Every structure is written in C-alpha cells, then in structure tokens.
Length: 73
Image (cartoon, rainbow, N blue to C red; front, top):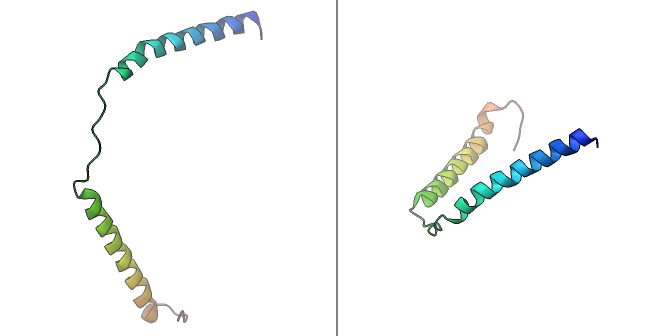
C-alpha cells in the first residue's frame, strides 16, 4: 500500500467510526417494542393458503381427466 492509499484508508475509517459513534447511542435510547400478539390476521391468512392449496389440488386432480391428451391415471 502506498502512503496515499493508507491516508485514504485511515480517513475513511475515522469517518465510519465517527458516524457509527453518532448514531449508535440513538439506537440504544429507544424503548423496547412490545411483544407481538396475534390479531387473527395470521390465522386468516393460514386458512386462505390451505383453501387455495386445496383448490389447486382439486383442479389438477380433476381437470387432467378430461383435458390432457395423455393418460395420467
């Protein structure tokens, strides 16, 4: 490494350390977030995924019997 590269590396390192030192105390000053609670949205979404999967299964089990030219079953 040349002298100019070392000075540049040192300057960038100092700027990163000063920036981190300025912002990290603000992170620690925040209050902790409350524990997550289930409001039913996750359950509704799970039921919707199960119903969509069931519809796909029924579609691809029943539909090939009359649509595909080759025999799957």
